[in-house]
Length: 260
Image (cartoon, rainbow, N blue to C red; front, side):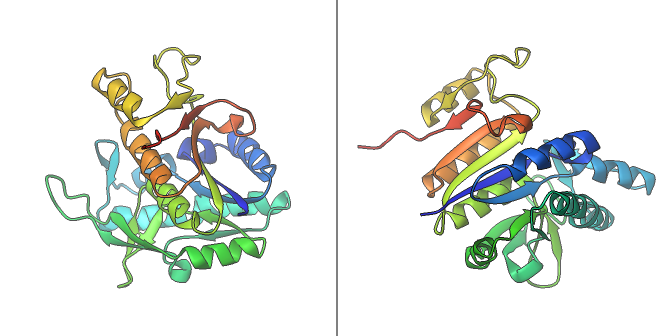
């Protein structure tokens, strides 16, 4: 089975010119097939503010009303996505920017209202991995924006970590997939104030232990839950690392204990 590396990068890295340039250079050097998934939340917040639209966050997740949906569509599907695509083309990578609506590659449903109404936020229901695999096999590098659609004409804001996880799981039918979540730290840390305290390997048992002790908390919890789910559904390896370390051994590798 051919190898594929799916890299997810946070907004901060792709929103600053120098870090974006470095990331794209590093990404272009990955051997074999590859996919890039990006965020862009800080740009969306800044542009919304300029337009007089207040950004509301609950537990680190954006509440997306009708006006905010317009902004994130412009920023994620337009500005950030196309800057990345243009940057990759400039260094010889034949990239194609996609939202979930493009080629109907990822369909979602509007998140049901429970304790919080997140508005136009999508929970992924279906990924058309065949069409992505076909593009990848033709030498195209998909650049996936954090937007999906409901197949009824509505775009939906969708968490970029979730897009990466769902795309990786679906593509595992076609490739041997390594999923890399890149952010500002070298990996999952034992001590958030010590950048060198990287947990090199995480199993479900260790994860539970560290959550109970409060070592792993906040936004890292759903990221890791996504990671374990990806491994259980066929992804070969998940690595959490710093964006400039995607070519070096290191970071936190996610694994699942073998069940006898």
